[in-house]
Length: 255
Image (cartoon, rainbow, N blue to C red; front, side):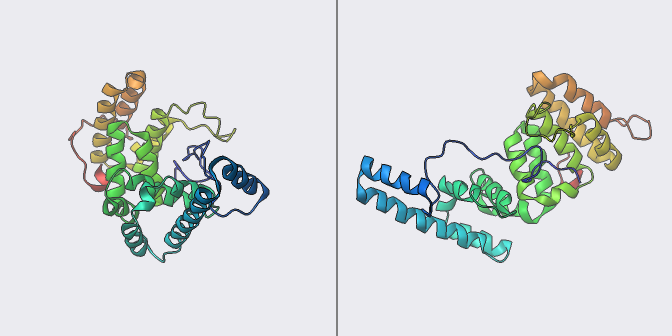
């Protein structure tokens, strides 16, 4: 597989810095110091009310994470939509250590961009995840692409989509000198696109190339490279040039 996102990937969802709220459960000297300072600044009652509200919010997040399957998870989030809009939700999740945390953060972010039902469709149906990721590519939207990838880990096992999406995400985020990347690993978009070409059907290659060319029009700083990647896709791995049979294919794995 070709990774874009996980807690160990060179391109990852990053925790926001400078958040105001302490962990919802006050259990250390740093948090106690925060409480005392807030009481001195704002008074006892508002601070106690905020801590109580924070604890109730924490319990909701914990119950959401404890759901047994994606259907229950979706139902719980639908019944508690405040978790989506409340910035504390991602703060609480970032404080956790469960490997599924990144996936749940991605689900929250996607639900802020689309209906809950649509977001969960991406989690449970890799074909729909491919479609959504390809739409993000054409829109030049690396953030949504990253969240779709994190929410749908099965994308990493898609022979064409995985290297293709990784290459485009790398291009859109200008991460050639990414300081978070392992020292011995450099992502090469050309190598990835060649891998996608090797694994893709003629329809996938043609649609992928068409998307790159449309994206190049809106990404002047990357026009030359994106056009080069598109040309690689339209050259059959066996050495013959394949003309794009369509520029509007978006269905399923042929996108």
